[in-house]
Length: 84
Length: 421
Image 1 (cartoon, rainbow over the protein chains, first blue to last red):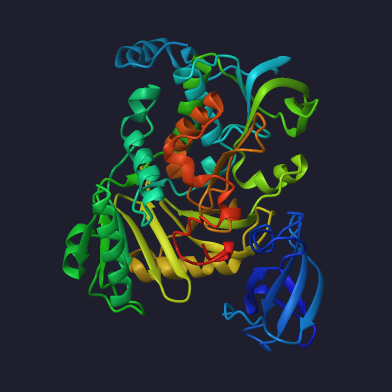
Image 2 (image 1 turned 120 degrees about the vertical axis):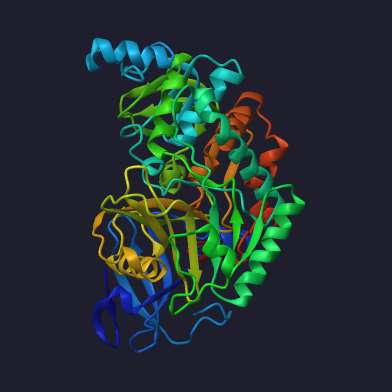
């Protein structure tokens, strides 16, 4: 899989690390924490370009084809301390 | 279809190979069943077998999208063990391990159960302390566990040079002697044959597209081969759970991740144990030698969600590096095959076996990468749940409502991150 980093261009997935999927809906804490994927075929995810510019990214991916649909940089790294 | 026996083997040997009968009959679905099991993998077939054998339900069908043995039941690394930390997992997997012991006789099919010992290797004092803690918890639950120091590891696993220089040296390990391996394909074939002999219909190449509801109640399933009426529907579709649940409109706390495994070219017997080698920063390999001689091994998940069944080559390289660090003598072996399986990874790393929404719809899924070893316990417990409409004590902790109530079963303590379970 190739990921297009907004800063470095298209790079191999091995340069990046996946952190987690992001919630897209949910009224209760349990829904936001545990029932994150509204549609299991697509996901919104946090990644970090750890073996590159180290910037945090938000990826939209199609899980059936494995392709990245959209990449955006996230200005602040996720604050919960679970990043690698 | 008669029972297998030594006499039968002799008789068929004389009559020639054409005398052997197919293990189950290929058939088209009938219009209606008491119970339809969606998914002809290990869990689905075991459930159908127990429904017919122990709960008196005879009009049972198993619907398989592809072919029997084609999914995760034929893609795993065949390891069985019950070396868990949490009591709920300990009792459940111990139930499975006890059933594995007698399953060959029960099914009248050789599943090649080989309790050769499963050894978790520790690569630091920290890890050895964690092994001691888990081992103590197991012994309190009445499960065998032995903490080995480095010398004892060397005596137990002769293939392993414990004194060798490696980046992550071996400090000791936790041994479960009753753990081992089972021939995975034989489990699928054995359950399918035993279920078919009890009158269960095994229907291959029949994809379930949705459920049929009449006045809000389950009335059957919509399939690629037409509508099939059913009073109860049980789902056991392993890595396909997220997609099927979406079609049925059920929200589940899981993601689909890929796990890869591989097998080397066959060699003479060199490894008579199951070894599990974990080291810092996410490195892991587990390996055993099959009866054919190939080293069967696997590692960590690919690391991010995917439903493609195509693994990343970087993970193959990582796992091969871990394997050759553990057993340098296999460096010259060639990789014969490697493959990826889809895993339902739940948010706490434990499975879900439950009745959905008070309806006659039952779910068995979210096995993460531990589904194979659970097969016989899961099959019996799921059959009991479907037959009685109530979960037994053994699987009460696996209910879906635990995510809303906060009673999570997080064996690894990783939090709601399926990729780290």
